[in-house]
Length: 194
Image (cartoon, rainbow, N blue to C red):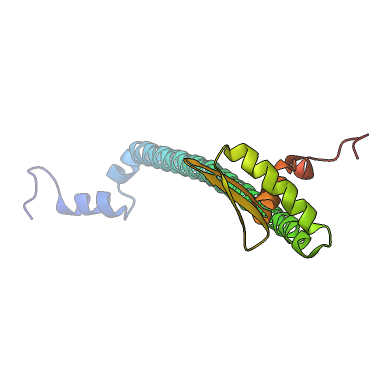
């Protein structure tokens, strides 16, 4: 290392290491202490600023995490609400389907019972009288020249050109079942209603 002109190598070493008690060392003590104090103060400021920035970064990260959690909860709730609404809708449709199926089965059973009862009239002792009345009504409705024939299931069918009047027992049973107001069977109970 080249020494600067006018500097003693031992004096420089003494300044750097702080060894000895030379007059130079003693003369620089206030400057050295001021520099060390400023260095410590600056180091403390840098550390404080680093702590402040770290705290801000942590606070921002926490806030962002809380915001994301809140948004995820809102999204989750919205999705859950949507799924719940879809499930409620499906449950209503399923329940309606069950009710309609039960109503259709009840209507079919009613029709079958009415048909069975009406068709049972063919074995009733007064059937022949009923048959004659049905034949007269069918012939009159079919018009002049109508041909009235017995239906194998009971009752009669009258035919004229372009006209067929079906007074068979199965057809009369179906017509009777169709006249029943089935809607009243499904209506909710009301006070004063039988």
